[in-house]
Image (cartoon, rainbow, N blue to C red; front, top):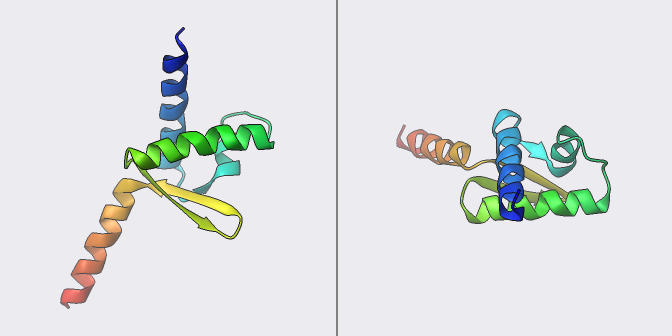
Length: 88
């Protein structure tokens, strides 16, 4: 299997985990993938989260030392909710 396909599958799996369990923390994603929670695994998942963020599929925010992630669609709903709330 080509290296690109493995990366794509991992990125898709990470996106599915984020969509089903949001907001989520990087360490939660690492443990849900079945990896040992260590710096290498966290960096690997964080890399894919950043790629998903560039593709505008997820949003991420640092809260202290934690990186919290949620689907981009939820951000659209939040903005729409804010617009509706202002109109009242």
